[in-house]
Image (cartoon, rainbow, N blue to C red; front, side):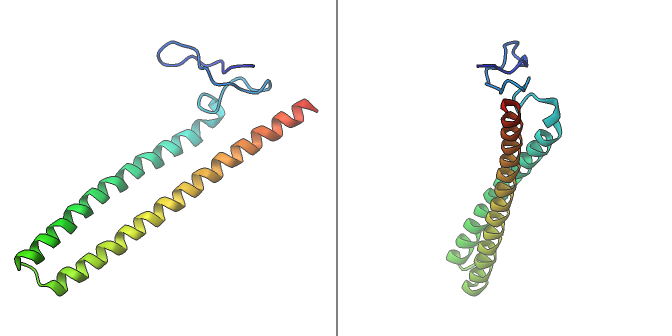
Length: 122
């Protein structure tokens, strides 16, 4: 089986298997550089979502403490908690959409590679 021609940053050769018509794997193919850059950008943004969740958890904990101590009325605490719950659902929906888009892009790349390999065999 043919392996990727790329040399990794540690100096070793990439071990990923490629089709006979390919020289590089997806991760090293210069033709995929823009797609990889976009994927990395999305990954960085998803880290922001994780930090948002940490912040929301802290806010919920503070709301809970304030309601328990009587510092905040239960009605206001309840509404604030409901709004934070809606916000969390919006974050989850956004994550699902991004995940679906990434899968669609990966599937399209695989289909393209498969079609190319299939044509080469014929």
